[in-house]
Image (cartoon, rainbow, N blue to C red; front, side, top):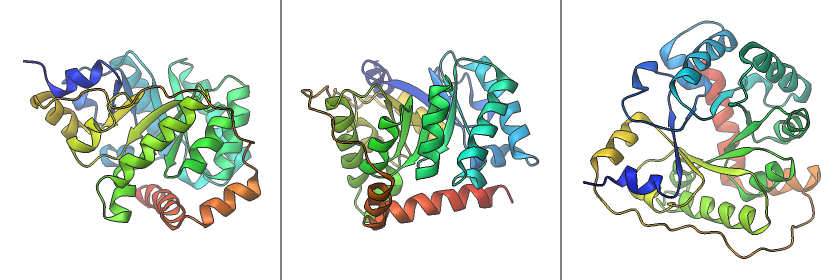
Length: 264
């Protein structure tokens, strides 16, 4: 029997979103993602040391990319983010590593400089098209867009799905090479509605549900016709557009606070 997970694999790559090493190997995946909360769930201590230790082990367990997130206290610190990213790269020295950086203006500036140095970045907590475009313009290798949290904010299950679909359409039509990863899912329905997206990063529980399900998952997203790229987003425009989007401004700050609080 072909599972829903098998169907998704025809069109998308799958990542596991976990720092629990016991979950690795139960269901084969290509990539892995971690964050401060996931690291704190499995161990307490110096965050950076723990993140490097766990990601070193995770790199042995998946064949693809592994995302390691910077300390959330650096979310508004360009130079601090660059310094910590370089420290991580020097410690792990693996071309499959992605540095996860929150999608603040400062995080996107740091991403631009890091990518120019050959350090690949995954801009996370993407909860608006503005952030997605700014990150792509900065040369981000990947972005991680939150489906469930956007849906929760609007109290509409498909709101997050629609956001990610709009990001996919924009970035692909403009020809950006940035990979689009979707995260923070609450249901199998949300996942299958985005079949064809570049990457899904999923909690172990959802991975097991998909592997056990036989519901169809036909390709939904495809590459749209090309369009001229818009003018680059300025800092003023970025901050104003985020300020004008109550959902995005709230969720970005909330996620950073939660990551920081998880390390206390």
